[in-house]
Image (cartoon, rainbow, N blue to C red; front, side, top):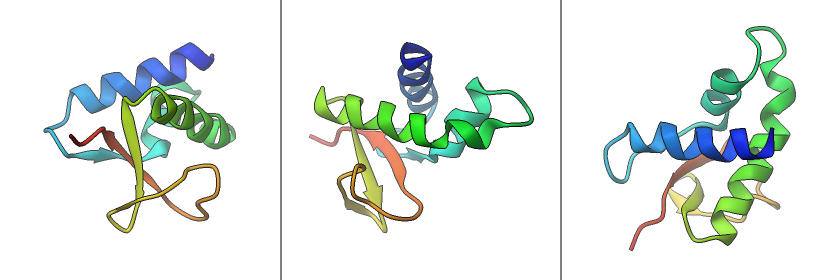
Length: 82
């Protein structure tokens, strides 16, 4: 499932314009069941954290880059900005 979540993040971002963001819930809904996708929210945030460590994405909150491990509340994921 870990690889599926990371792949889903990258796939959904590839469908967006450069600089556009996705919500972790979009990933959870894409990969998870129609009912119960909310259970994937933590794992999606963890997958985003791994992608951050690899330099592939950034996690933002209010437009500012944040550490997904310590961010509280809603976050967004975008491709790494050069």
